[in-house]
Image (cartoon, rainbow over all chains, first blue to last red; front, side):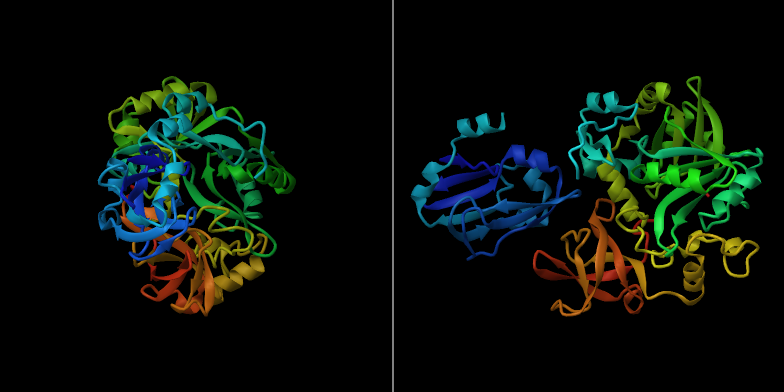
Amino acid sequence: MLKFTAEHEWLKLDGDIATVGITAHAAEQLGDLVFVELPEVGAELTKDGNAATVESVKAASDVYAPLDGEVTEVNQAIVDDPSLVNSAPQGAGWFFKLKLKNSADADALMDEAAYKDLIG
Amino acid sequence: MDQSPALKQTPLHALHLSLGAKMVPFAGYDMPVQYPAGVLKEHLHTRSAAGLFDVSHMGQVIVRAASGAYDDAALALEALVPVDILGLKPGRQRYGFFTDDNGGMLDDLMIANRVDHLFVVVNAACKDADVAYMKGNLRNCEVTLLEDRALLALQGPRAEAVLATLWPDAPAARFMDVRDATILGADCIISRSGYSGEDGFEISMPAAKAEEIAKALLGHPDCEAVGLGARDSLRLEAGLCLYGNDIDTTTSPIEASLEWAFQKARKAGGDRAGGFPGADRILEELESGTTRHRVGLKPEGKAPVRAHAQLFADAAGQRHIGEVTSGTFGPSVEGPVAMGYVPSFYREPGTQIYAEVRGKYLPLTIATLPFIKPTYKR
């Protein structure tokens, strides 16, 4: 199941594990990324708190935690090559996996159609 | 920043929109920060081929002495600018800055000898103040801001070949030459200069012909439009100061490591030593040095360290020593680059210091500027 946030993140849900990344729309708005900083595995994230940082030549931007949970895995590939986020934002450019505190929290997020309406 | 209802537009505004530029307010103008290619690719294209920049927002100013003599205009401007303007040969330009009574800097500028007058290019954000200042202080001179001209910068290793398709004399010009030229029937003033670290040209032209000339340049397969985003990363890799970031009224030219801009004639013992605002402090600093300096900063990791990051002597952030004034990711360096001010004790290249970024103290090394090897055609 694919869910979206108003902060332009996607979550792919598999039981109580959510794979999290930024949307193609967000990647395009940010431009070519040159630096990615990911959370530590084991970090406890709080919804809307800082989870990661991405930087283009121009500016640094925060990536927020979409829901409460614990980081179980991070995608080192985008740290080594941030351009992966631009080339495959909703695939190989994923950011981290989150073990959700309450998997029912995800129900409140947007589905793909609602997200598409949001970004016009 | 104020929500200005009426941002000014350059003569190329419609062209920027048609090219799909992302527009942002800059110094009161609606300016292209990037085109669809994006900052990274625009930067790299400029270093590998040629980039065309709209810098029409900058102030183009004519200074003409009432006597009609170049020397009189030059001597008048030397009272405000501490570089050798009298000694500038016809058809040549050089870098300078307006200093204030405290030895700080009011703006930086390019100054050209145009045989019987001076042609001066100043920063967009300062141009109204600069023009008022010159009108009030240049004795027996007429100061005219050219409102009906555009300014384009064409930069990169293919700039000469691109421009030569419209101006066959381009290859004959050397770095900092300023020539008259006719392009597509328009009277242009072309200098072989720029602010990217690359060989290139700045072309002043009538506003009415700007779009036609820009389109002709962009019609060359090696030439792409480049926005203010890449202009900033290019100039930073080239170690060039941005007024308002790296230099301002709180920095003296010597603190800013701009000693190279002073010629012998204006220094102590020179024919026209001093005689500019803040001369006591600046000449003293030229002789004896100062306590802090603008330096290049090379972050050791991959994280960009940006303007206003605080600098520390130690990894624990106990001893604060300065601040980053410009910082980004350098696409050609393939890593982060920055500039900032540190006490003299830390200025030696190779010295390790630390910058606070998101609560961490990241190591960086004092680096020799520029970060890239400039390709000016001297």
